[in-house]
Length: 621
Image (cartoon, rainbow, N blue to C red; front, side, top):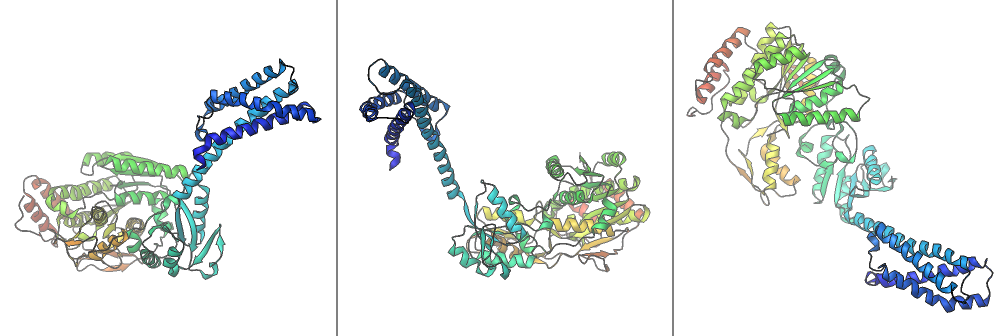
């Protein structure tokens, strides 16, 4: 309502300010000794003064400006209008016999009127901007509940309070520690326990929940997420410390709850001393270093102070992104040992390039993660699987042997066990190459075998998410299909640990936990996305694909399991093959790979990998 009359209000304020200015000027001009005559003359002639000023203010268009957004130009107009007004008033009353004010009072009046009329406009502009900001912030901030009033939760509160751009308005804490109930931390009260979350969300009109207990175990996280899901409110989480690269708590780490949070397991206890022995001050090469596992290996390796870290990848974008990420990490953590970071774009298929790299950089330890891993794609392109997974591995293994690498760790897969697809068969072939070279080389060769990695490039999780975003259906090949899953950080940490245990020739098997039904995985992911399975997002069963198993095996018949110091790592003494057998088979494959079709290539592999059964005998090239 008042905004409609803002110009009239400003004019009225100007009149009051000018009158007040001249009255103070009169007092100052007469040294505060004034008579009734002075007062009578003042009030007789002040209307004329007001008219002069207001006419000038209108002429200078001071009542057409939007003072809430005024610039220097508008404020300059106020200054000139006041100076001009004072000069006109001074001349008018000093060329007449009227006893209005002493001469010096006019100059005092000029200073005061300018200060008052300019000051009111500056104040209005400041107030207007502040009011707009407060209104915007108040309306944009989300009413938030933080679960966990411990160190992490309190650090988040401080950061949110210290950054006005944060969109969170933290209303309350929730914590199961009953000694904290009704206590206030950083101005936020603990209102209840996790069992009371639905009640508190409704009572306080909570719009977002943040789970801030990074030290909590996975079962507890699952329980809390289940409770939060009942509220229908967006739930986010501060991930566990071991999944955070720099292990710092801040708002940027907050993310949506992921399926990994519900399927992952508790923090891994690493033998850091054992890992340091073979990583610290050494030159480490990671092939496939830009990939899901390779990049996480690099993130973990830099924490153990290597002398050099060589990231080798065929895809330049992945390698470039990781290089920049690690550089930012080094800048932020200058107190840490910073290794020399070398990024190389190369293909493991190129034997000459591999020899050149090993000769130039002389790595002490090699983690071989470069591989083709997509089962359906490799079924249609077996030649590529063989070139990359078999010949590529052989090139790197042989270069490691010839250039006196101390330790070589192959990243393998559970699909290498009794393989029903060409991808698994080529990975089993790669394991056999590693085992064969271990028998004739000074290098300690080992392989680490594990199942599916949650969230890795091309895994089922991104596919399901995409299908959910598109409104479904989510496609599952079979209602009873099961898989083992592991998070990327967990897999990478266990690979490093297995490397510490490797003495040569082992195939390490990682404890993948309980198998997960893919149908149940799809249902959980749909619910995490805020939908109801089968009602809002359907699940469609498409049938097993060529080479796909209902379940994966981590061991082969006849393999013995030996416990290690880490309860999640076992070593399997798999019967390998002789070096001459491997070399002969590799030569045979090299001779025929460009001459025979896809089905014949698969049969050629099956003749050597006795556990591999070609899926479709009618397959054509």
